[in-house]
Every structure is written in C-alpha cells, then in structure tokens.
Image (cartoon, rainbow, N blue to C red; front, side, top):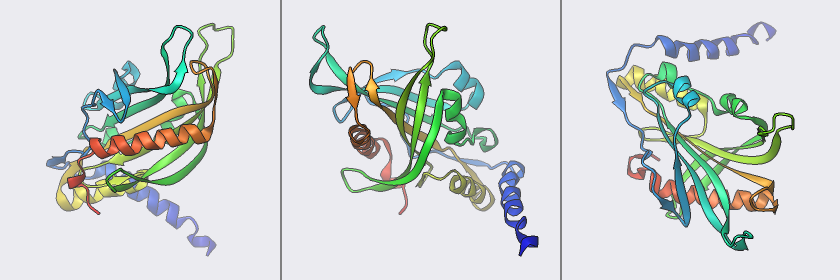
Length: 242
C-alpha cells in the first residue's frame, strides 16, 4: 500500500500540469455572467471602481474587470452631519482571458497579497429569489489595512468573503473542478471558456464609519441577501445547466 501512496498525488499533478500543453482551442465560449454592473441592486447603490494597475499587470491585458463598492443605508442610523451610515459590500467580477494558461488563479492564493489572513473555509448553497441554486465558497479572514501613519500598526478587521466561478453553462465554487472542465472542453469540444470569478466581501466587528460593533451573524445575513439578489439578475440563467 505504501508503494502506491505517491501515485495519486503524482497522477493528479500530472493531469493538472497537462492543461498547459493542450492544443490551442479554436472557439471561445463566453461566461454567462454579465460584466456590466447596474447602478443599484436590491436597495444597494453600486459605486463603480477601476481595476488597479497591479491587477491588470498580474492577470494580463485580456482580463476583464467589473468592481464596485456597494452601499446601503442602515435604517435609522445617522452620522453627526446628518448623512446616513451605510453598510458596505466589496464586489469584484474578474473575467478570464481566452488563454487559460495565464488566466487560472485560486482566490485563496491571491487574497493574502491583498492583506487577508484566511482563518476558515466552507461550501455554502445559495438560492436566488426565483429559486435558482448554486454553490459558493465562504471564506473567513482577518484583513490588515495599512495605517497612513507608517509609525503605527495596520488596522485589522474580520471579513467574510463568498466567491464562485461562472462559466459558459455552469457555476462552480471549486477551482479543481473548473480546471477539469476546461481540460474536457478543450479536448472534446475544441473550445476555451471565459470564466467569471465573482467575489463579494463584508467586514464585521468594530467598523469605523459605523461606530459600533457589527456581529458576524448580521454581516453574513446582509451579505447573503445581497449575493442572492444580485446573482439572480447578473447571471444569464437560461444558459446554466442543471
């Protein structure tokens, strides 16, 4: 039995590395995720953001980005100047380029570079208001935000992040499954898929602009409601298989 213990990891690694040597596909299947963001969604106002120079240089010129800070007023809570105090969701949709050799990435690998220390991970099933279901990965992390005053330590915040991948005709929250689908599509159908990596995150704990503690349960409930409503409108569900 011991003589076989090395075989499975070796075979799996060989299969995954083989994707870089597959023939170039002649067709590109576009993601079922809509990249154009609406101005609002379910009472949330979407303040669109531009991709950073580092994101563009890291993922390549063919990569598409749709990013937004999503704001929704907390009922009955006002700042001293009379303005509403908002909840905030950080939304990001990254559309891979047609060359899957340079567009595949695993979120857990890139999040630490953005200041996240991941502390937990699990699979979660979402249902949209009209009954569509899909799986997302839920990550718990501690996010460090550098202090403008370099002599002071960075501020740390608890964070919940959900992510999933939207392909041409399916949704998955598993990077390995996505890779195997790409291999099959290229070998059998002669096509590449442009996958959209969708992530949405929200902080909880002592939030500076809110001025009080936000529980993990409150943040998670609001984030899940946002994701379910947003996904119902932002995905072309008639293309997604069962």
